[in-house]
Image (cartoon, rainbow, N blue to C red):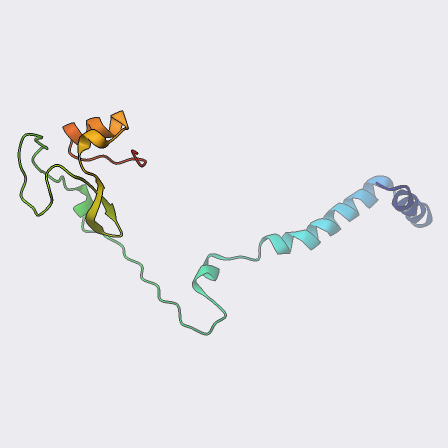
Length: 132
């Protein structure tokens, strides 16, 4: 605390007969009352409203059909099998903006990341960082 502010507080205490403890409590709670309302102004509903005058479009879906507990069965990937489709069997494709029509490399052998290359050869896919 600066000297002037401290001497100001001492003069107030001497004139009013208030002790240091009482003055500290008063200042602490006054500051708390001033700061606390600014901390608690936001509510959950604030994210659904705006000042532009446009009605918000909100869709809340609760799925209680228990379909998320069902197991999905599929055949395991077999590297020696040729699968149906319009893609070239030697190229490595990646998904971008919902489309798988993007060629990443012309062959699995061109993938320099060992983990990605092994996953592509054994599992048929790689899910991770860009395996340049």
